[in-house]
Image (cartoon, rainbow, N blue to C red; front, side, top):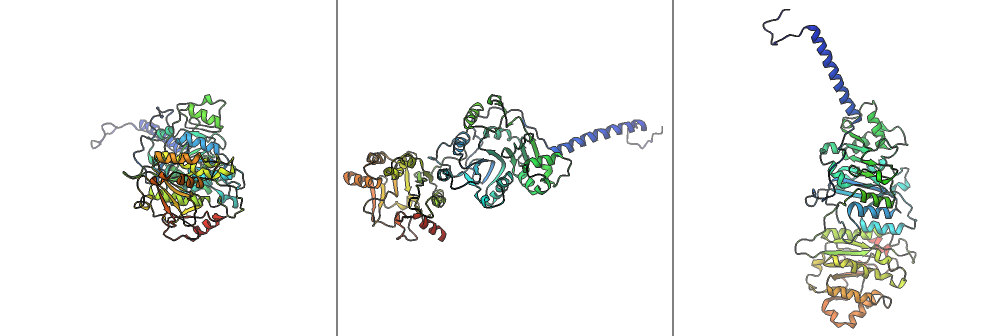
Length: 534
């Protein structure tokens, strides 16, 4: 064999051996290529079997308030209108929200959540209670527009809604879709995804694809994955009987050519270990790895949350005022009486307008906004006591704040620029409770008043409540004021002042603070007319 002196090799392999080695290399290369192609076809991404303790300090990674509008996790829980008990329980278990006395005024951690409400019949007897709940917690999104369309409430409709959020300045990495008969461990999910890069996280498609229709509202999706799947839906749809995410998974497992470059980035996870859909007994649920459990009754939701040691995660920080400023709550009624005057529209019809008017004002000035219905419900057994709910509500809220501004739900804030601090800066002292009386009122108007949290105020409210059944709350306030002259030392009465604090609908001016439509038998029409002009 001739070996050239110019060769750069130290050894030359005989041709037969070279061909043999070459075949081996080709086989190895082919195997690797098949593995890579298989990976990109199925994209089954593997996660740890279990993770460490996730029950300590669930919010330790939330450094300060999140004001960006971008969230790590968006939790969307589908619910029927009448399923109030499920929503109440999930608020408590998942977020530690047991009432609205210290409301979440804005989502400023890395978690965003909403209940998505199926289209419903507004004539349902539960409707009034539903509106009260919606006004009080401000965490529900309705899909009523589907009632008059040919579109059903589907997974695709929900995914399209998530894409519309960018128009409101909201974005997210990961969306979790559940129904309200499911439970999840948010703290565990946060830990599990902490090692996944943002790009991978936003391309995740994670569900139980081996369980028919389990992915309907039981799926975890990256924001980019949602966009990619919706953009290619015409290519993957084969049947009206399957959800778009399941179809995307089946398409990815098939031999089809990826419809786009972004499709190759999708990470499909078919997970029957962490996402539990059907069990003989709850004791079968693995407590170290489970993230979500489906098909649970109310009692089972409680039991599973205890068994899995699910800690609540805060979705907002406490609403604290700037240093040196008092904490203030704007409180109103979210209880709606029967429409005895046959008004059209009724106060129920303008409930969202009225409450949103006050919520926007409170958010603008850093106040809490607290609509209350419970205290009114507790007085419905006696028609003579029904208006006492406002006094009971104020007494319930007052311990949490320095000042409480009560506004009836038929009163509207027309000057959003006026702050409580500025309004009374030159008119009240730190010891004053503030009450207004218009020129037309012979007694005090309990529909709008401001009260300070103090021992004197609690004693005053207590004395008022002792007069229940003898007088209505406005008469009680007036009688106490006349019987106890010392009250004047603690009270600033804006006597016959129609414009500083509140005024009635037939006498208001553009720079007035609050307009009260109580003098009308059907105030809702006046409220509606006001908002139409705005």
